[in-house]
Length: 313
Ligand SMILES: CCCCCCCCC/C=C/C(=O)SCCNC(=O)CCNC(=O)[C@H](O)C(C)(C)COP(=O)(O)OP(=O)(O)OC[C@H]1O[C@@H](n2cnc3c(N)ncnc32)[C@H](O)[C@@H]1OP(=O)(O)O
Ligand SMILES: NC(=O)C1=CN([C@@H]2O[C@H](COP(=O)(O)OP(=O)(O)OC[C@H]3O[C@@H](n4cnc5c(N)ncnc54)[C@H](OP(=O)(O)O)[C@@H]3O)[C@@H](O)[C@H]2O)C=CC1
Image 1 (cartoon, protein in one colour):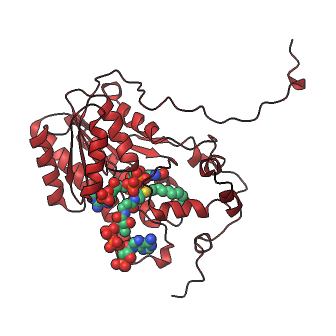
Image 2: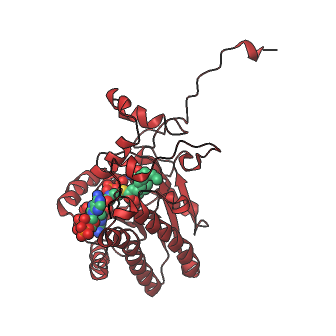
Image 3: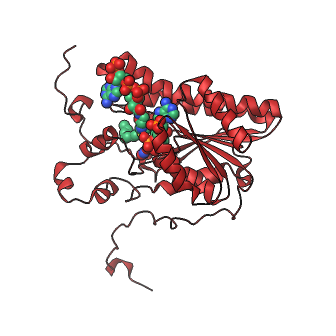
């Protein structure tokens, strides 16, 4: 019998690394002949999601406001498999949203899959948030998601065809997000939409799911979000220069997520292997959002976290 007590305990090593980039759990050609529309598909996580569908054979339509970014992403994604087209669009405008679907239909056909990935966010204490700042984040994140989803649903209902919607959320939809009241409220709305529409449209063969990323750093992260992460880690740790390690040590997985891990989850959720999953929001975050204890870190106000002086009205 081994005497375990006398053996040194190996240090915790966290969750295993993901499969390499370019690998897939789904069979080659899973998305041959299908059209996938990704909002915000020109940057960050949206681009990573689009890439996984492309590798599996999908024709892609990516849509967002900035044409240059879309074009650069289109060239990158085109090397992966299927055809790619980009359509400039502000998802806050329902007429522009309809035009995106017209363009997609003309290019490849009615999208079979819609990924609502576009969103807006910046950290700001609620008492400093202007009405327009609130409106801007809620309009893009919640209303834009609804306008896209509504257009997708209407066209499929009219055609009598099935489809799959995946809306990207955030875990503060459940917990609230101090410093991000606008985005957290909007993402709670997105989660609620998933649940309402899955029931409304199940009878017509339309699946509606949510997908929540954890901390998945990428090169397109906005300066505001990057700054927020910098403030969340002590200055002496920045000096080490190993940002990834600093962030990893604060996750139960002892690592951050790779954008492709979100892409794999999206490709699964819209695939023939997930046809009975609808109205569900899947969290891909290494259990970071569950990290609670009876005794939490000392309370620091959002103002202090953001280095702001006292509220002056
Ligand atoms: C707890 C868990 C931890 C969790 C830790 C972190 C979790 C992150 C989870 C979620 C992450 C994401 O969503 S990441 C996605 C982030 N990506 C993006 O946001 C990209 C898109 N963003 C944008 O385009 C812009 O940032 C945005 C402002 C939202 C929209 O652009 P527009 O041109 O429509 O709007 P603008 O005219 O510039 O600005 C509209 C108003 O917003 C105000 N505004 C703009 N930036 C502001 C700022 N930094 N602080 C205050 N107010 C601001 C302006 O002053 C305007 O108000 P007035 O002056 O009154 O007129
Ligand atoms: N990164 C993370 O760690 C986390 C991200 N998330 C969620 O993941 C998703 C992707 O985030 P991420 O890749 O990090 O962010 P990015 O800032 O890289 O992407 C946001 C995208 O949305 C597009 N967009 C913004 N506003 C509009 C608009 N009005 N109309 C059309 N497109 C718009 C932007 O393109 P353009 O500027 O060209 O319009 C951009 O491509 C979001 O839903 C976000 O809330 C959730 C939790 C954590």
